[in-house]
Length: 175
Image 1 (cartoon, rainbow, N blue to C red):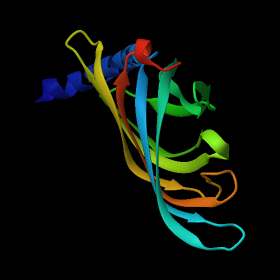
Image 2: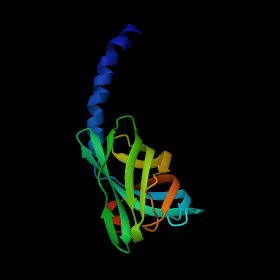
Image 3: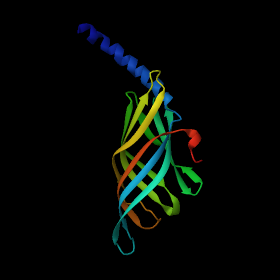
Image 4: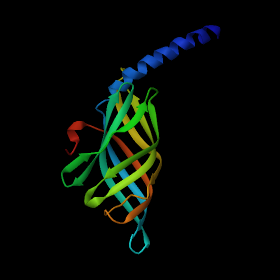
């Protein structure tokens, strides 16, 4: 038992040194995101609300920044016109998962659409025995649209939002 306790600092140091190397392996990873929102559209002239849902597909890339990541979400503004939004700081990973807590982001879309949200995400990574990325998933733990969200550029859209997705090969991206 004592020997195990003496080795604990060395094991911790080894894991600390492995995490940045593994983090670099995730650079260039792409996710296909399914976005699903449920809530109410509020007419800004009448104040009347009606329930609605919204679905959208987007893509997200991971870019390493030291031992952390920046992610960029690409959405389609018009047919064939994909645009990347601002970078999102994701932090670091080491043990096969990453939690992104209360991340504020905007996902634009066609016709003045803007999904402005705050979300907590869980990214789950699986590596093979050689340390190469095998697969990854994104799940939403919590997500809420802010009061500035809109589906048409005028009326407000409020409610909840989920982002989910899996890795996709860069050769299958639509842009």
